[in-house]
Structures are given as structure tokens and as C-alpha cells.
Image (cartoon, rainbow, N blue to C red; front, side, top):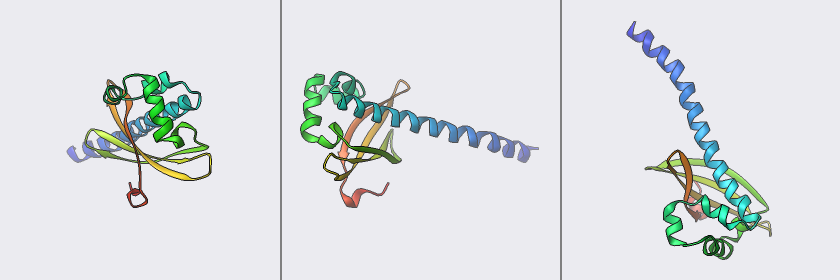
Length: 136
């Protein structure tokens, strides 16, 4: 009887777990893509809202944040193509790899550090990946 219970629990629990993981991935992707969309519209206030409180402490206002992205991450500010790739867990954070093609056609791989705060995903940092750092 116990064996049957564990088999049944696994059969029911596994799809629920997979659904929850896929739902979280979709939520993270939506945050990343929404922030990129906000940058494309020069809506720095909305883009700033997708950043974690730690990032917002570094950049005191949306204008400073927007200037940093324009100067330091022009491929994020004005991409020609965006593709969300694989992710991995690192402690409490999830590292989401994103492939971005810039306006000149050059491909860049970025790691978005995502953290969950009060059931909302926030971007806690973005790092340009070197070719050797692409495995997720």
C-alpha cells in the first residue's frame, strides 16, 4: 500500500512540479522581455521598475539607470533580436541566459540574474558572457 501511495504521489506531483517550474520560467522571461521593451520605448521608469531594490540603490533614479544601459549595454537598449535561452539556479537566484543581436548584427550572450521578491521576479544584475562562459 505504501509503495502504491508513493507511485501515485509521484505521478501526480511530477506534472505539478514541471508546471510550476515552467510557470516560473515564463514569469522570468516576461520580466526580461518587458524590460527590454520598455528600453526600446525609452520608458526608463518602467524599465527601472523591473530591477531589484539592490540595483535601484546603485542607480538612484530611472534616468541614471537608462543612461547606464544606453552606454554600457547598447545591445539591450536597442536590440534587433532577443531569444531567451537556458537557465540555472545559483543559490536563491536564477541565472537566465539571453541571446541578443544588436543593430549591427553582432550576437551577444547575457546572463540575467533573477531573484524572486514577494512572488515577483526582479532583475538583480546583467552580465555579458564571454564565449567560454556560455555553458549553462
